[in-house]
Length: 68
Image (cartoon, rainbow, N blue to C red; front, side, top):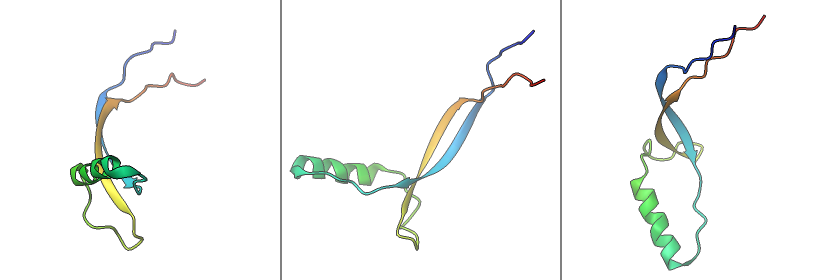
């Protein structure tokens, strides 16, 4: 019989590349600046000119039934 169970809850810390904002108008520009101030960045852009942000997620690891 195949027994399915919920996996263990885990925390993951990911580094994600932050792209450029494409906004139009004064309201969109001010919201974009607010977003830029609130992000959790990893310091100044690297040598390649890319900015990165840290994202912490929690979730469950899916258990796969054994094969065979």
